Image 1 (cartoon, rainbow, N blue to C red):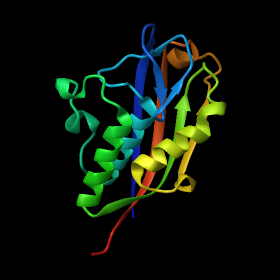
Image 2: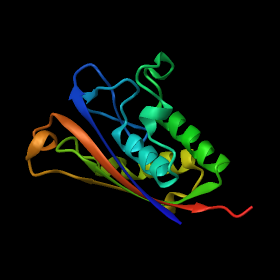
Image 3: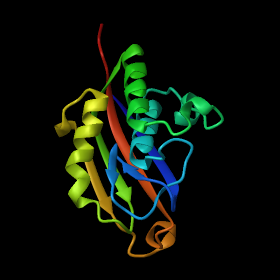
Length: 159
């Protein structure tokens, strides 16, 4: 068993769609980034890669590579899942927290869990997604950005 932690943050901006956990959230702003800027999936991928000691998403999917411009983070999660399998690991479970003052995310949590689980090849019962505010403190509390943390447990598959 191995544990990994991931963190990501992106600035909110006008003119972009808000994608979290592979789900489009109706909101007047979206996250700024080279890909779709899905902070939840990015934190999860970094946690998975970290647990397997395989670097991070900046190493695998650099923002200097136009191949990842506007990339769907769910597709990138599928690639990370495949890479872990190649190295002999599977995701046991993930516990993820999104930090956003707005919008309210509770209505979208189950859809996020299922999208992530499908991409990671696991059951939704193995994926926890929570959302919290920061009581209007800091950049997330002021509505300037959204952050996410993820903690995962991966298992080495015996061959």
